[in-house]
Length: 81
Image 1 (cartoon, rainbow, N blue to C red):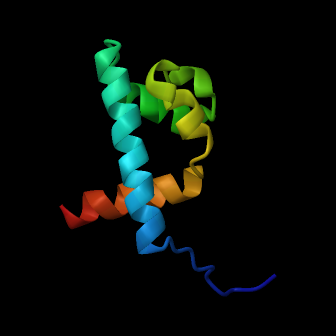
Image 2 (image 1 turned 180 degrees about the horizontal axis):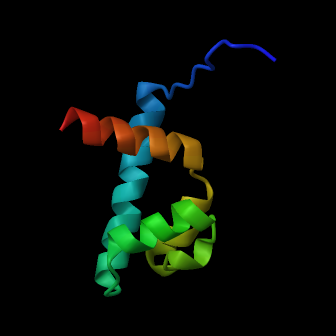
């Protein structure tokens, strides 16, 4: 085993696209009457796409988002705000 810390990074372009996609998912959940924070957290914790509505193709969009990258962007956004 090695004691070196692994590095993880997301490119700025990928981050921009991920944020756009997350906004689409968020808006679709709101339009359908769901609490988007609860639903997205449920998806992140379980990786069960049924937490996300099929409305506006949101479920298909979230299936193409890497959860590790999503978590990195969410933590970065929280820390920077």
